[in-house]
Length: 384
Image 1: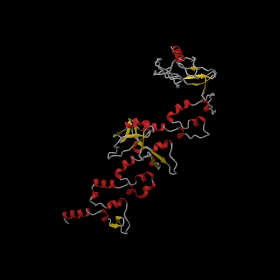
Image 2: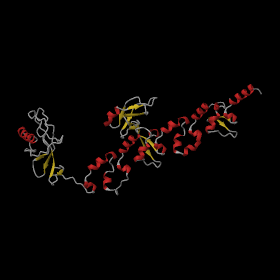
Image 3: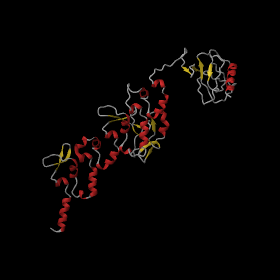
Image 4: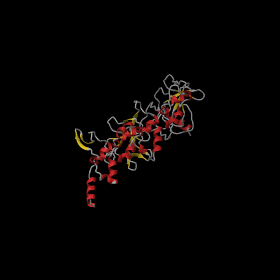
């Protein structure tokens, strides 16, 4: 056989499909068509895929890579993918898309947790930022993976932040400031149905591809700060009293909440708020003298022109009918008429020198302007 004959024969061999070379039969079935071996058994997995290609196809490295990339992980590993949580999630992903698919896996998926997608009452997907604030978008994703409309906040207090959310093409996620990225909000359950809580719930909601993000540390630290103490420490009725008192304190507010505790609470004493006959809370000074909060008088008269910035809170002694004013002056807003017995609790607007005096007016009757003017002049002079 001359060279031309050999080439012609090789061309015919290379044109044969792998299935034909292996003496398989391509057969029509009730569910479609498949390659079958000599015993009539269906050929499966990656071998069945190769059966569709010719010997000439697999001669080319590029073509061979293309064939492999089109296979799924299940084609390569068979049903053994179902025995592993990660492989099970990736079983139907093509080999050429595995890197992207792995990066898109949640840590919760890898740990074989059950995922519950959080949505608004209207069914819109909820996204959460670094600090646990929630947002949603009522429009649909376009072909570029971006929403076609504006964002809204689940909590109306964050409306301004929602308006500033924009897509960051560098990382393929939305953010409202540097390092303040949004992620899909999910709850996670263990196989027995119990909710995943604490640090595990935070880690579960990170995708593999996000673990090497430059803002990963900032994001996880911020989210951990939103956990309450009982999420990271087991606290029950046998725990020290201070831990019980702080059980629902967020980690990022722990120092602040500790400073608010009474020593009596830590010592497990019962606190009883004392009130006088009128139902007002009683306060005590260091000498044991008791006072109750007094409602200050706001004078609204065009004839009284006080422009001081400070306002006042008054305490009235339990043993005296006159209030003790514990601030330096009263702020007065002029209007067109005097409002008799117009009361309002006023809180000090800045730290001013302490000035105590008795205001010689009775709150049990209508106060005339002359009496009020005299009292306010006394107060103004005392603050100088």
